Length: 347
Length: 196
Image (cartoon, rainbow over all chains, first blue to last red; front, side, top):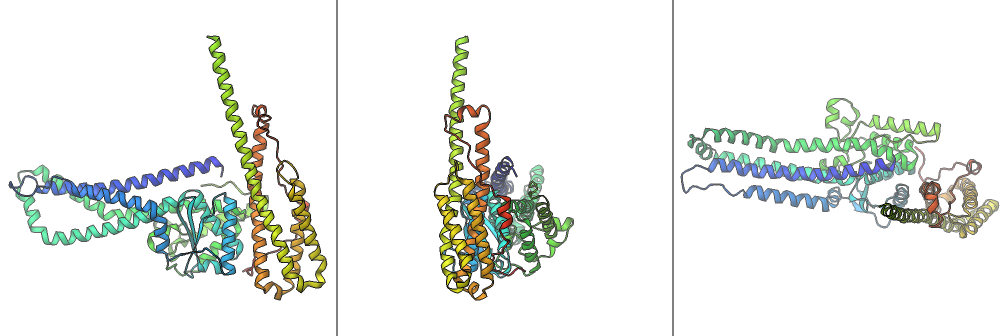
């Protein structure tokens, strides 16, 4: 990949990060102000002296909350992801494997021209790895203990290079933001839904009756119904849509990171055999939760879907099918063997 | 009117010269920095070798020649490294380093024959460090060659070549691996794990 391509990729990822935050805040504003409008339409035109919801404090509160969450995710997202996986930072290596990991990361820092990221070890016996961080100066690479024992030096190098590729392409910030925001969205959506159900049960008679009582304003009533339906649909669909978004965003990046990894190590065959080993150990990576699944080199939630190809698998998998990735890498390895040149990376 | 056009042109030229000068200086700095990266790793490699030799010496009395060759190649490389810089001495140093790599490769073949020795934590660790250093040299070399080539091409292109003497830009030498030396080096797997 040429430099121009790389910069374009980085810029696109930065724009996507900003867009993601923008959409997130706007969504919360819509949920908040939508609720205000619904409450206003319900309460206006009632008998004098009854409460009228004129000041949109729900919308203001939710927008501020969303802004705060986004800011917090931007600043603290990487730490949250690492904390959730139970990883500990490798500062002074004590075993030969740890020593080797530190060496490999430093080699890849030279190959990629990036500052050395901090290294974390996830206490899990399933081989897997992920990268997180806000930019290339504050980046973290985490590998599981299982990865260190399962792979040989060259394979480990391929995996670390793959993670460094995510850092260099600025994938880490976007994917970490997604992890944090998707998590928050799911939480709040669940909460609102529960509140709404409980609230609906106790308050049904009074409120709906009130709305009907002002029957002279038919137009307002229709608007209210449409609004209510739209509002409910967005609350219900938000977590699903956002998760699909996270998956789609991550799938595309894996091929690119594989190709960049081959560029760093000049040894695509090693990453191919590493992926084969990771694929073969079918145990799920328990330490890594659903929210950060798309950060990992291989889907940590069981491997059933990644083996299949097809529409449903495409939609639901956070990663491209493993056989396809391995095949691409082997093709690259063959090219290197034959011509001594690495084929130009294609995104 | 004509006078003003002349003034504007002159200002534009002066402005371009300043920009070009700064660009060449910046590229020179990048090349030097890339070279430093190799230099640091070579020094690390040279510092590690006496340790490795010391660790295996006792157990390998009758392999004196192999050890001697490593020490000599290392000393030769150290000597050449002292006055190698992008403007001179790189091909000689590259050759010495290749010879050192070949000597180390032969030593590793010998070490493989002494499983007890290899099992010593110290030797294993030193081998891992040497492998890592060699990889770092290789990756640093890629970066250096890319940077240096860009610098060389730029300062020879028209009109950059007119500014080059001003910026004291000179073509720098690339770190090229000689095919013969490469072929000579035996392929040794230095990883500490058995191949699956």
